[in-house]
Image (cartoon, rainbow, N blue to C red; front, side, top):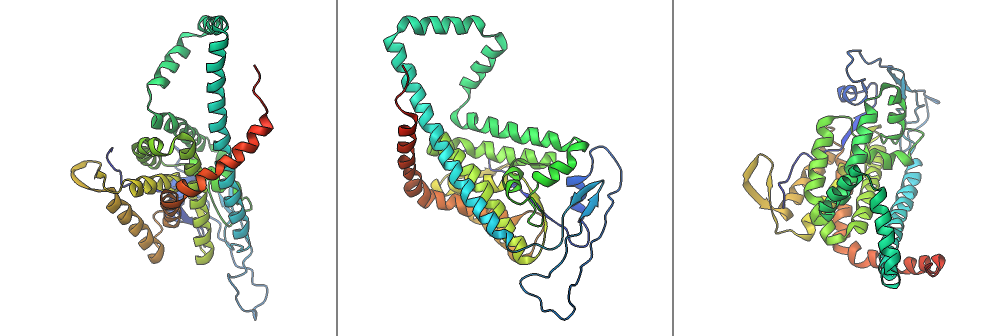
Amino acid sequence: MPLLSVLICRTGPVVVRSSFLSHTRQCLARSGTDRQLTIARYSRNARNNTRTESFAPRETIVPTEVQGMVVESGYIDPSKIWRSLLFTAAFSTGSFIGVSIWEYETIRSRAMQALRSKLSVNWFKERMKHQRQEMEQWRKDLTGWWNKLSPGERIFAPICALNVIVYGLWRIPSLAPTMVKYFASNPAAKAVCWPMFLSTFSHYSLFHILANMYVLHSFSHAAVATLGREQFLGVYLSAGVIASFASHVFKTVTRQPGLSLGASGAIMGILAYVCSQYPDTQLSILFLPMYTFSAGAAIKVIMGIDLAGVLLGWRIFDHAAHLGGALFGMFWCHFGSQNVWPLREHFVGYWHELRGPPKK
C-alpha cells in the first residue's frame, strides 16, 4: 500500500459574512496580480423590527464584489436543502445507472468482437491491417502507454486530467466569475445543484490539487481492484456530491454561507472504503516512512479530526464535507457493495431489452 498523505483537504468553507476571510484572497484573486480585493459589505435588511427569528435571520442577499465578480452571500434559504437533497439522490442514482450501462456495453462490445473474430477471421485481419495503416506513431505510443497502466491508474488518469483542466481554467481571469458561480459550492447562491458536482473537480491552489491527487492515486489501485472501475467511479462521483450536500446542511444549520471546492469529499469516500475493507493494512505518512499504523486506525483518526472540526467550528477545511464523504465510503463498504450494487442487474435487464439483439 502506498504511503498515506494526511493532507486531504477540501478548501472551505470560505465564510462570507460581513466580509471575505483572508483565505478568499487565495481562492479568488487573479494570478500574478497584486491588486487588493474590493470588498463590499452587505447589510441586513430588517423587514420588521418586532418580528421573531425563525430558523435563520431573514436577510436579503446583497452581492459581494471581488474584482468584478459577484459572489452571493448572506441569508441561506433552508428550503434549498430540499433541492440539494433531491439533486444528491438523483445524481447518485444516475451515476450508478450510468456506470452500470457502461459495464454492460463494455461486456457486450467484447463479446461481439470475439464473436466476429471467430465468424470472419479474414474480416478481422483486414480490419486490423487497415487500422494499423492509418494509425499514427503518436497514437501507437499513447496506446502502448495506456496498456501498461494498472486498472487503478487507468481510472485515475482521466479524473486527474479533469482536475488539472479545471485548475487551469481558474488561472484565466476572464473566466473567474463563471468559475466562482459553477465550480465553487455555495448554499447561498442561486445556482445550488450543479456546483455541488462540479466543485469536486475544482482546485485553486497548486498544493491543494497535488495533495488530493496524490492521495487519490495512492488508494485508487486498491479500490479499483476490489470494486472494479465501474463501481469505483459510481462511488467516487456519489461520494463527492454527498460530501457537498453534507457541507450545505452544516452551513445552513450554522448559518455560515461560504464557498467550498476540492475533490477531498470524493477522495474521503474512497479512502474510507479502502480503510474499512482492509483495516489491518499497514500505512505510513509521507516523509515519515518509519512510523506505520493500521488503515483502520488511520480512518478513525482522520474522521475524529473532522468531527472535532465540525463541533469546534474550525474553518481551515470543509470538515462537514470530509465527514459526509467518509461516511458514504464506510456505508458502501459494509452495506452498499453487497446490497445496493447487485440491484443494477434489474436495470441492466431492461436496458438489454431496450437495446435489442446485437447486429451482426
